[in-house]
Image (cartoon, rainbow, N blue to C red; front, top):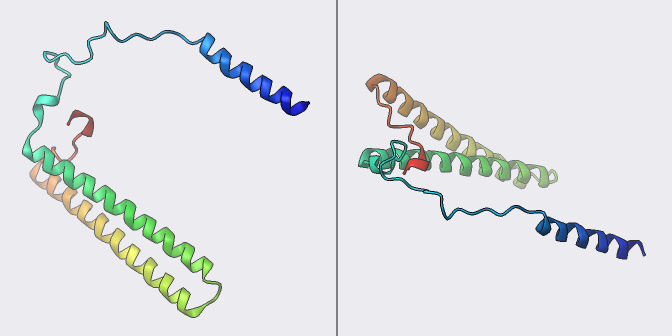
Length: 129
């Protein structure tokens, strides 16, 4: 009886969501105005594409190295005291830390170059591309 009541309650709730929803129409909205000063699609340059690629690569490399570090930690925990398993996990953690240090040092080098040469194109909003 309680199960049937719960199913009926869920059905009534889900049907009431469709009854009380508002109508959204985007037919009369001008989504892209080519003459708008906020339209940044025309500012794509090769330099911005390269810097966006570098930023994307550094972010992906950092995420992969962090996941590798987490896998090494889980492998260490799951080794159960096995010397060979602990050694494999230790090597994996060490390699992940080396990868993270490479990613962070390359980011620091890019930041130093940006500051020394007053380059502001390293921070490109990917929504404008």
